[in-house]
Length: 352
Image (cartoon, rainbow, N blue to C red; front, side, top):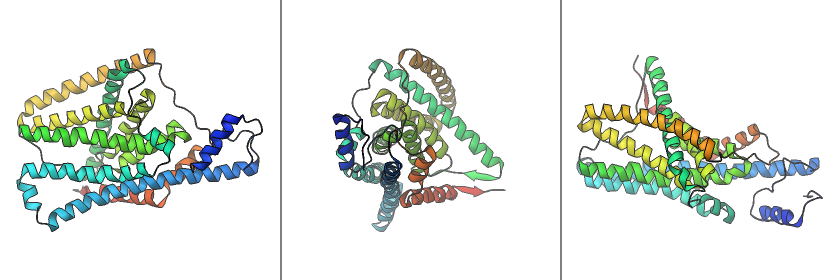
């Protein structure tokens, strides 16, 4: 491929390094390139996006397959009764099963990355502005609350049409031990594992094609992993908010904190509903009002004092639709979407 004539030596070295690592070089939207070079670069960019899609799609499929396999093995070895009757055993099994199914596929994808991609995927350093951490967290929690409201409206609309939506929920814990177990299993583990997987392994390599594209596609994969109509719109909305805030702060820890506190709220409200319903209702109202008020204040502070981050634009020759088609329509991603559709249909029943 012929390079742009007015390319300095440093830029040329970067371009050659990009080629050696298996993904296309950056040109400012193809400016100064011949038609032949543009066609070649377009093909290389499409192939690079498809490679990232295949990796993400296989990880989602692996996540689902390993979850199913863990349940099958539990039954085959005769431990299903112990799982139902022994809370300690069920807790350890759930944690082990989640780590195997959610962490392992994306960790394998991480191992297969190019060296520069690995560095980007592990953005667990301190945020660029530590003073903005509480601000970004409350903004993220407000997005979670908005996502819950949107999901509630969708659920009401579907149920008004005569359908019932359920989700594969775990038994409610009513003991202090069960509460602590859920804090780890539902609160801490998903926050760490899913942020590493989605905002690290999936989103960061896509950023070379534009931050907006990376946020949207990683949010799509985040939604795919939830697999039911109650959680899909919530996961997509929250994924967009967390993706933006992770990029804005330069640290995946921002996403981990938002993810953890939102899940912690879910654990606490579920526990209170089981043991003290009146207190749960008060807690629900106070929490949502506080999150919305502080979230709006947080947005104002972030815009005024946080040097609000502007998403970077892509430097590719592909249009937004070309990038989306290249990412969505690969065999593993289509299979992952099919699994999403099947799981969604499984949790919907017609009641008339």
